[in-house]
Length: 433
Image 1 (tube, rainbow, N blue to C red):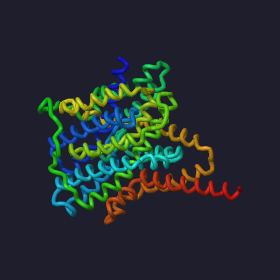
Image 2: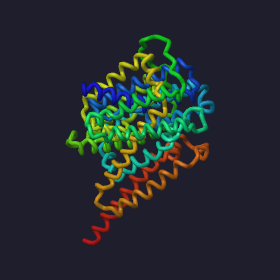
Image 3: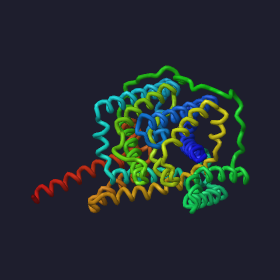
Image 4: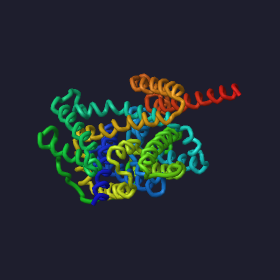
C-alpha cells in the first residue's frame, strides 16, 4: 500500500512538472490540437522510459527525467528562426529530431572515453550549491506568475487565485512538516488532490473537457518526418550536450548527497553509467519526436520534503507513466491539472532546495574562498536573467543558449572561479613551503 501511494505521488509530481513544456512548444510551432496531444503523449512516454532506464542501468537513483530547459530554449529560439533557416516549422522540427540524435551520440562517445567522470570532478559542493540557488531563482518568476493566474495569455493577476495559491502553499508546508510520519510522506499527493478539488469547487478556472478520441494509442516514430541533419544545428547540438552534462552531473550530485544523508546511498555515484543512459535517452527523444530529457534537480527537494528514498516506488511510477502515456484520455486528464495548484505545491519543494544549497556550502572548509565564488557566480548568473532575449539578435544560437540562460552561465562561471581560486590557494601553500 505504501509503495503504491509513493509511486502515485512520484507520478503526480513528475507529470505536474513536465506537462507544460510540450504544450508550450506545440503553441510556438502552431501545431493542431491532435498534434499537440501527440507531442504531449510522446514526451511523457520518453520521460517515463528515460526515468526507468536511468533507475535500472544509469545512475540507479530516484531522480526523475524532465524536459530539459536547454532543449526547451533551443526549440524556442529556432521557432523564431525557422523561416530564415528552414522552409517551414515542420522542417525545423525535423532538424531538431536530428539534433537530439546527434546529442545522444555525443553523450555515448564522452561516456565511452571516460570524460564524464573528469567533468564530474568539477562539481564541488560550492558549484552544486550555486547551481541549486540559480535554478530556484530562475524558476521563481514562473512560480509566482502561475500562482497569480498569469499563465497562458493572461496578463492581469487574479486576486482570488493568488489567495488560493497562498493558502495551498501554507497547507503543503503544514502537511510536509506534520508530526505524523505518513502524512509527511504523502504530503505532495494530498496537497495536489486537495488543491485540485478546491480549485474546481470554487470554480477558479476553466472546466475540464472530457477527451474524445481513441482509448489507446502507441507513440509514433518520427512524427514530424525523417530527421534532418543540418550542419549548423549539429554544432549547436554538440554544444548543448556539454551543457546538458552540466545539468545531469549537478542533479546526480545534489540528489545523491540528500540520499547519502538519509542513509540510502553509499559509495561513488555512477556518472559514466548515467552518461551512457542519457545518450540513449536523447536518441529516444529524437526517434519519438519528443523533447530531450535530463535528470531533474527537483528530485532532491521532493525527497527532502517527502522522505521517500526507496527506488522501487520510483521504478513503479516510471512504468505507470509509460502505461498512461499510451492512454490519451488519461494524459488529457492529467494535462488539465490547474497550473496554480501545480505551481503552489512545487513552490514548497523548491523552497526546500534552498536549504540543500546552503548545506552544500557548509561542506566547504574554506569559507572566504567559497564566498568569493558564490558572489561572482550569482552576480553574473542572476544578472543574465534580466537581460532581454532581443539583446542577442543575430548571435549564434549556441552562444545564446549560454548568454541568455542565467543558470548555465552562472554555473559555468562557478566552475571556472572555483578552479581558479583553488589553484591560487595551492600556489600560496606551495610558496610558503
